Figure 1 (cartoon, one colour):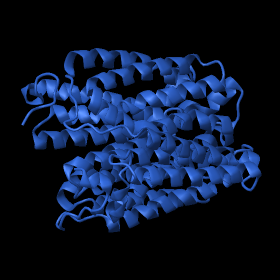
Figure 2 (tube, helix red, strand yellow; figure 1 turned 90 degrees about the vertical axis):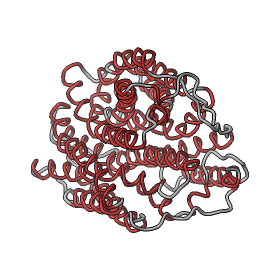
Figure 3 (spheres, one colour; figure 1 turned 180 degrees about the vertical axis):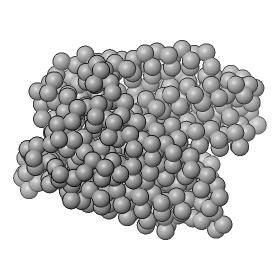
Figure 4 (cartoon, rainbow, N blue to C red; figure 1 turned 30 degrees about the vertical axis):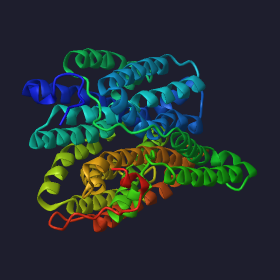
Amino acid sequence: MTSTSLTAPPSLLSARRRWIVLAVCALSMFLVGVDTTIVNVGLPAIGRGLGVGIRGLEWVVDAYTVVLAGLLITSGALADRFGRRRVFRCGLILFGLASLACALAPSLGLLVAARAVQGVGASMLSPVALAIVVNAMPDPRERARAIGVWASVFGLSMAAGPVTGGALIAAFGWRSVFWINVPVVAIALVLVAVFVQESRGQRTRRLDLPGQVLLTVVLGLGVGVLIEGPRFGWTSPTALAGYALIVAGTAAFVRVELGRNEPLVDLGLFRRPPFATAVLGATAVFVALNMSLLLNTLHLQHTRGWTPLATGAAFLPMALGATLCAPWSGSLIGRHGPRRPLMLAGGFTATGGLSLLNLSADTGVAQILCAHLLIGVGFGFANAPLTHTAVGGLPTSRAGVAGAITSTARQVGAAVGIAVAGGLVVGAGPAEIAAASRPGWLLVTLCGLFLLVVARASQPTTGGAPSVPSGSRSERQL
């Protein structure tokens, strides 16, 4: 059997070098995750600095997440074809330059455009970095530990974003949340050049450009309608035209994907209930997380007059819960399967949302902090079992695609969470934000309850591997 690696096989790497490779790739993953949430706590400051309202600020977050979601799968395919280290370095450079453009942006339009380019760079980091780690660690047990570290870093990065952002904004202003990326990217580029070897996929997939274009258009239209809907009216001709385009684009995407030998998204995977519910569960988790971050950021800063630093500190319990429970979740999966951590994730998330259903200006700080802790614990327990449920029972040739689809679903959930949260409070005065946000906390609760449904659909460890449905054209090619 021949290797497709461009340099020495990964088995020749020393243990020290393998774990340095993991550290470098985890650093890039931390950047991607932090930049999904770090801007949230800075939105009020950005709005004051650029003179824009909540609706425009939503695009600052969602321009990044929509582009990231739309390009994740294609970036992974490009890395397998042209070299993972090469694409990874290109992603780092693009991410760093876009961060610089964000830091210098004089207007909202340029900031949103730079955030979209940041999303392009981030899409080259997340799936590619994981492939590099897997390639560098041939021993299954060592690889399992590395992926556990990876999952912990991912959970920490998402939850640590608001805390990091609050501290940076308090010390250096809102532009510092973008400046901080530049030296980190520079360090990562040096480490990649020294320690990461080139590799390619053993079997490269053809690029599905029609599917890629349609997926990006549908995601952009969907999020755009959610953000702009309150402005032009949900039943206006513009909104109706948007709905029609979303339906038409989705139908065209399904038709294109079903007709290709190597589709961007293997729709046959959705015939497996565990996979379908895990993808929806990943979306729900990120809807809940990002809605919680934005709603309470606006409540604490606009209604209560808290500083960005104090607001960021209020999310420390969320970061703590996610950090402690992510590795615990992986341990529970190893002993009991994904069902138990998913039940815990759903229970904690739903309880956190319920505790803020009656949020008001008089709600105690301890209650808010407790809700943040509960949601963080739920988030920490959720990620590893969702990925396990999505890829469990699949052959290796399809597990990578399943994981990529799940990662895409997470970013879609982040974009939707921001769009819906902003739509609820847009136009509300400082005294009205808490009442306007109550439907959002109900949605957070429902997202937690849906994870209980996902837990029911997941496969227990002692059960047989779920069968892979036959009949999809992409499967017959493997």
